[in-house]
Amino acid sequence: MKKNRITLFAMVVLTIATFTSFSCETMCLNGGQGTLSIENKSHNTVQKIMINGADYGTLDPGETKDIDLNPGVYEWQVIGIDGGTGCSPAIVTIAECETSAFSCSAK
Image 1 (cartoon, rainbow, N blue to C red):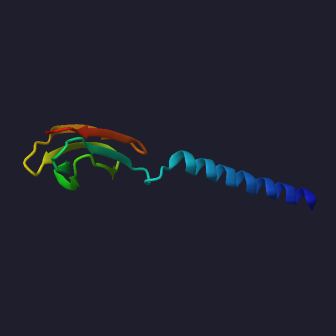
Image 2: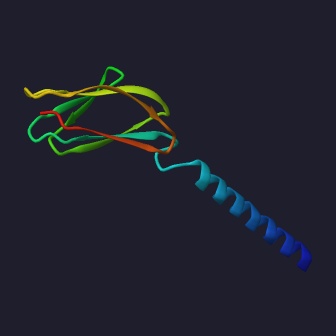
Image 3: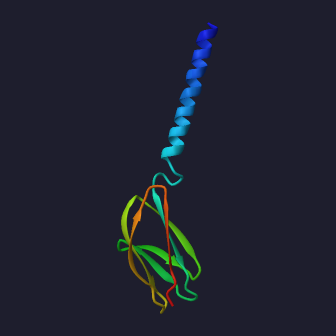
């Protein structure tokens, strides 16, 4: 009887340890997505964020936005919307659980 309890206890501990290590190694906080981080380094230009032609909002001067995306290749651009310029389009590969950071310092 005592041997069965020890065996059962060992199986439970092993199962918990296996589940815990599996989930920590394969999952990240944003569900397997990656992050595109864009910073507006201009001093007075509000910029619109465009990713694959879709509008992802605006960036005030000095602001940074993190956008979670599925892994893949994306074209992004920031466009000045209040008389200032933006930055040229760029291609980025978003990897699972990683952040790709960029800045635009248009005038």
